[in-house]
Image 1: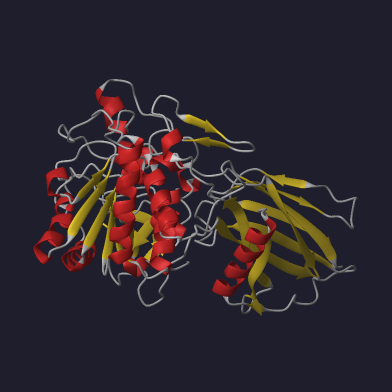
Image 2 (image 1 turned 180 degrees about the vertical axis):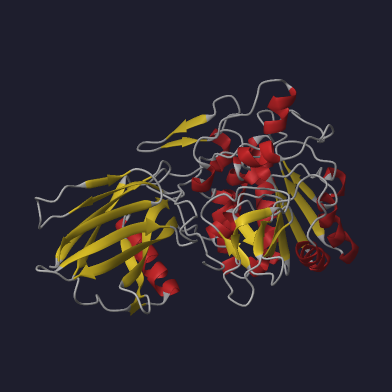
Length: 476
């Protein structure tokens, strides 16, 4: 989870048992358990997955109660552990994308998560099949009409406080709130009710990477027992619910899920992340002895002009057909360039420099301008554009591709708004080392062309250029 989230929480003396030793099943035992779990998953009629921080440690997000967890280190006076990349650029683990594949296959019916990192939504789990019990650091909600807004930046507050933005529905306009719970906040009824319903229906509840210590969430899997359901726990530390479980697996979550997917002959697709941004071009014609124009170009977030563009570091603007014009380097948000020049067509080149954590350094976008004629409106199906970008990216195995989703003229103004979709990351999930060859002591496996880190609960993936799609629930 987010280090920022942990630091924003109010102080609580008792946060459960911390720093317990990790347990690793012997290779032959682990293999047997994976095969048994695969059979349970394959034969299940209503599979529910219950996830905790342990499935996100391989995404570069520290857990809380593990040997290197946030609260464990804080209790030892060692401060907060460092994240390996910005929170908003965290990539789904093999486990996250495996769950997406199981949902697409019709096997996984519902996901219950205690995490606030938004990676389940980012990886492709449908919102209607996900209960986020503790909220989402990237989501705002309208307390008036209930509209949800999924962001590509971390919301500033926790504790369901007001944020700087308002509902975009013109009939509403209420101030939005964050969705992340603080210690004393009650679990949201909508999420809790859906989670309870699916646990009662479940014949298998698979608990992944959770210590099962936080109440009342940790008691949800027990509801399946009343209908004859089975609980499976995959975690490196013992949990208070182990005695209630049909099967307890002490192994790295990614390794276990990779084994299950292999046994089910279910392929894990690469993960492609696509981010969106607006380019706004505005002009004012001035009539005199010579016609000239004042114009401005803005690169802003699709969530509004005041929202941060977290994945863009800077913007360079040049004029290939007009070398006498000075190149502009915009380092500070909002990225705005203002110019005044003669009224004649102009070719503008935008070099979008991407932030740390993106799979490529920059994207070049041609932006031709004819001051006296509109560029014409474009209004494509966003889902189709994004899917096509994904397909081409997977085929070519490189990021940085982009497409225009929409181009429209603002009524009554000489203003044009263009929406771009750009592939900022792609991740391939490589083969897992055979269980018999894994060693608790030797935690780094080397392959011929790729290095794979297999630390506790780390994501066993082949490093490429990338990441995946943030599904927008509503865009301001």
